[in-house]
Image (tube, rainbow, N blue to C red; front, side, top):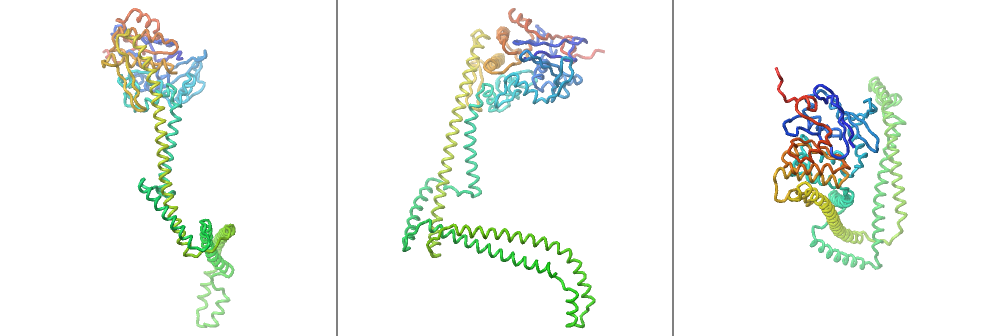
Length: 549
């Protein structure tokens, strides 16, 4: 539980304010009982409580704008052990672990800190983070989460309903029971996407367009198989499809072997030319030039010698490139010879079959390919239909499971809200009703009463019902939630708050002079911070006061 909060900026006048100590059950921040004092720090203190639970709204508050950067010190207690921390408004992404003398022990980033809180509160919930759950029931002015008509949603009711309902499912610990069915649906959808992708890239044949074409394929397949059988019967010996396949396979291998050998011959010729060039050079020697002069005395031998010397200089450079080319060609020949050996081995592994004429093989193979194409089209149609049925079944199972879970949550919340409402209203008025109609749709209303005070009361009752039915450790309600509520209802609500002794409830409240004596007594007994005008404000002053000359 939250044990203590302190800050050097907290003042009573110009004197330091003592640490604020909290306890299990109701913790009250009490303002003016008559309502004569406003802007004294009630909501600010509530935002600071949210701040120590990992929230960030406080960093945008008036207090942070008016004050210099300041540090909030706080502690939690779990299993009789106190853990102390600090968090500075200017470095809010870091939470510092400190000792009782505020000495720094280590620093955590905010994510590690909220994960630590989740672990301590046993709130490692699949599908929802600690902050995304607890922040929803910390309804404080400035957090924009107190739209009384949309209590499940944050951001002033703008959060998608699907996301809000998912968090509720996680809070009630049904997430994993739904996730299994959701995974099945996603897997079915992925299989359909993979099938469509394979068709788009022609890894598998396209399916027929519909049942009419499917039936037409069946008829054509039967006709073609009959024609293929007649063709086979023309041969004197019995023709087995496997024999034809073997013959076609050997012919295909023979064509590949011929192509490979032609490529080997071409690369060997290239290698021979490279070797000649490396051994003898591509240019004439001086002896060659002298022999040339005997046949052509008029030739300018001196000019030819100069050309030959130039060629000799570049020959050294070209030799390196020729060696590289030779190595590459030799590697190519080696790879092609391996292919040649594999093809020969494959051909040898195919048992000899009877000889078929090329005309027979062409006709038989053409029929066989057409039959297989039509069968593949129909098979793709069958696969597509099967995948569609699998997705439909997975979708039905998923939505049925979601409906079952939502019904269970709806019953639990509505039953609890009915009981709380009877305590708050004395059983005189209708309880709010939550209807979870789908995974992305809900309604929340109080039958036959849409008044502002009733709507706020209903949202508070909803929060209490969720708190009592889940592992949530705390909730926080700011005074804005109570302003329009009739004081008899508020008096009863205070009693309900006070009964929640196993969890922490933080409220900021004022204008309580018209509450019952019992309610006022509870508030006095549970007050952890009393605020009032001017010097009794949270920081020892009210910034809204005009400066005096």
